[in-house]
Image 1 (cartoon, rainbow, N blue to C red):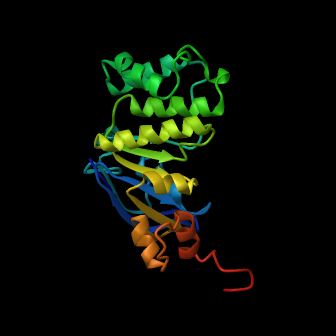
Image 2 (cartoon, one colour):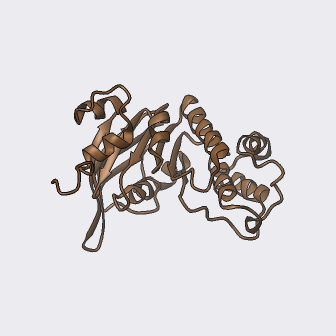
Length: 248
């Protein structure tokens, strides 16, 4: 199952948040979606998830149009937002079982156990959200997204609130899903991690796609020929933020 974004545009009144954005994510790919605050990344992800209706353009999730075939499209995806919103009076275990009932996952308990181990949530099954740290809540949201094994994964800042060990484990979780055939779109300000795990990178700036390619392709575009060029250097060069003070 793939992601296809064709001429996506989203406005809020007179404000254009996303302007004619097009890109694709194939099965097995991890595509990084990066850009400064206000670039339109979260709006893009919310439109892909069916939370926001596009003003114009088309979003296909596994071949299903998110506007014309919303139920079919949403069954193919899991969206993990940057803010972990959980039900106050449901335990971790109850959250996972609720997802199982909503999506018809008969073996949800069997699927949940390895996820709890993978995300370091063992021993937290009976905990309520108020008893969990910010990072633990984020892990619960991600576990709820992964427990039904959808073929399309949308991550918005999935590493917020995690310690270094948690970041490494989350990185492994994301990579493992892609290796198993998922199409993954990942938005993060942690550019070294994006460079490490992503097949390609889409750079957004002021609602538009500035660049789309591998790190090597983007480095060549801005004439950074060093073998160790970083995504941060590339991003600053492409968006014009690497000039010394006083220069255009």
